[in-house]
Image: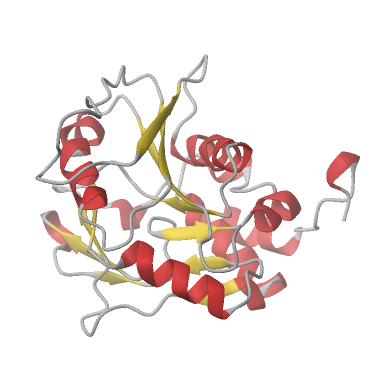
Length: 238
């Protein structure tokens, strides 16, 4: 990382569900229109057979940064796709990996505000989050704070925690992970200030009540939070 220019990657899992691929072009356009472009985009093709856009053409009137495609050999699911994608982004030199759903839209100053907040904190480890505004479906207009999507993490966070717990893969993976951070690492929760509306991201969910999660998610979240210990083994012992 240079003193004034952190390397920022946007990590986008694209699963086989229809709503993932349907909004991907709009998602990429919102990235191309950022006031400060990310250094690269890393797409995790989670059995979606994604066709990457031709980088020689313009998208929405703007140019996209480099796109790296990672195709795992088996179906991962959202939590594991984020875990793999974030790790791959760090392998490619990212200081911050911004997690974004394929059906999400970034407002224009997200990456710029993320870089500014990171630099103000002198590049310290953290879970840098912005608010979410849901659009469409039964939760239209609902705000969510400290979400998974539109949050960026540093290598140190993934190194110590291992990312989203594997046990949370079938529910709201961010709920368990954020619960762990709130209890055990509250200093890592860093708010990235938004514009006056604080609406940095729009989720286009079309009747998908993601807030309901999977049955038993609260029990799983509590169990994981109570039993959390930082990594103490192998080359990442801390």
